[in-house]
Length: 232
Image 1: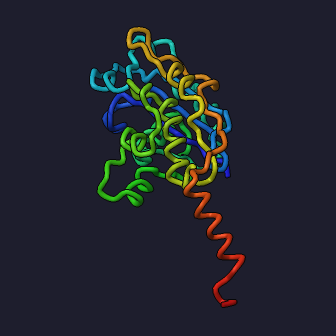
Image 2 (image 1 turned 135 degrees about the vertical axis):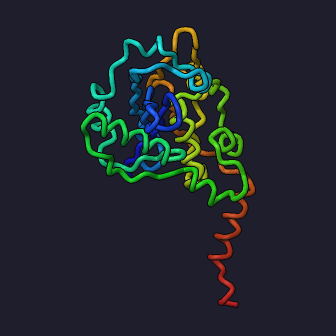
């Protein structure tokens, strides 16, 4: 099944107070694994960048000055996501901003099904922190390149977290093979603005090495099945 890992960066918390989207990151996954296709859009919000927001994502008004307006990139965005489910960490926040931007651009609201990884994580780990950094630590995912929040970089991290939340390495894959490339691609400079990520930063799956104790348990189960107790 095709799904889209999605994240946004904004000027603030509430679109009804005049805050806007400044970055959209999308990462295509199929059967929970990245395909290598991604979309990264920087958007001129037509307003100033509050200091608090700049400290979070490092995207300055100067950097966004020559970027397109949302109506200029909306068709590219909608074409990429299609009608497939959107996997989002704290989906209500991003969906509210996206639908506000779509309304201002004269477009209908999204009909894509949102999959909120915050809800999934809370069900699996009740009482534990479920922010993206905490989940990366839990699953031993390298997020050292996340000095700033960034929509596409966060999508790459969320893709790994989502794989783990869905059963992860039990399915026989490990997305951590190319962390060095992702760290380099995720570097940002607050003076010149964020550095766009490229497809090279997307991690490739590699076979999972099964621990010896798992093999032993598996072999014991096979032996039990080949000599069932009911025969005795």
